[in-house]
Image (cartoon, rainbow, N blue to C red; front, side, top):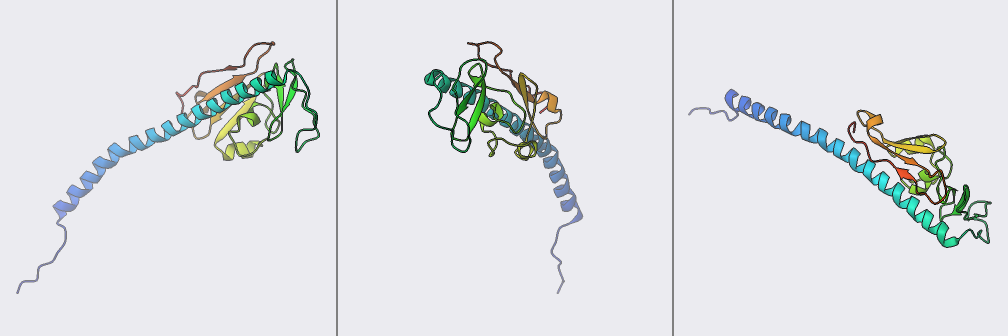
Length: 182
């Protein structure tokens, strides 16, 4: 009797390796594209949250018509004034939001403004570390705040900016999302 071994021939192994190489050459760019698409989707979601929060808080201020709250905002010692003037405060279920011309203020990290109002993190007034743990970067000046997504190849070109209104009866400007560096 002949002893027949079972297994793959060298040619079969080479063919399988070539096929796997072709598949990986096709799949790898698609995987990379999915990561970019995910960063763009996250950036668009953050922009939507910022726009919605801004509009909702503005509507609440208009509905309260400059009449201060009767009691302190829960968890704080502040009575919100609901002012639609140059500065104001508004009580939300999470805490007090600072306002400028009846829209959320652009404030530094850890203070209550558009960053807290938008709720893009699980913390109301997030620190930079908490914000970065959620995958965001945020920088602010006196009048604008820039949101970026971590992991972008060029964060400066994977962002949008919230610019608070500088005069009464004007809305904030939310710049278009820039995605070339995502």
